[in-house]
Length: 71
Image (tube, rainbow, N blue to C red; front, top):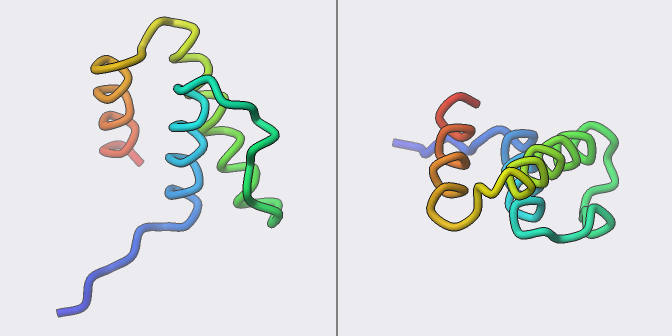
C-alpha cells in the first residue's frame, strides 16, 4: 500500500509555524513559488502570534498538534 504525501501547502504552513514559534525571521522563508511562500508566511505569522502569547515549549507543541489535526 502506498503512503500518501501531505499537501505541500500544509507542510509549508507547518514549517513556517515552527520558524515563527521559535522567533526566527520571516526572511528565512525558503520558498519562491507564491502560493507555497504565502502558506509558509501564514504559518510564520500564526507561530509568531503564539510565541508572543507565550505558547512556547509544551504549550506550543500542543498548538502545533491542533493546527496539524485541523488542517
